[in-house]
Length: 72
Image 1 (cartoon, rainbow, N blue to C red):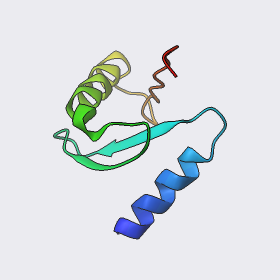
Image 2: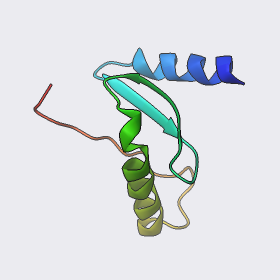
Image 3: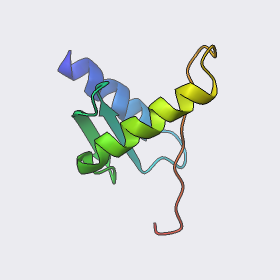
């Protein structure tokens, strides 16, 4: 499974404009991170995902959250 997850993260990292990707479980535990994504923030990111799900509870697939910053 680990190789499959890393493969998916590498695919996401190869997309234009992506500089970091973070994958966590439902409790916010970081499973993997690539690029500039810091696994220390996985709990905060999981919280954002839960709140996005509340905005669109019946939406499938679930909303995608993109964080942007002028810092990079």
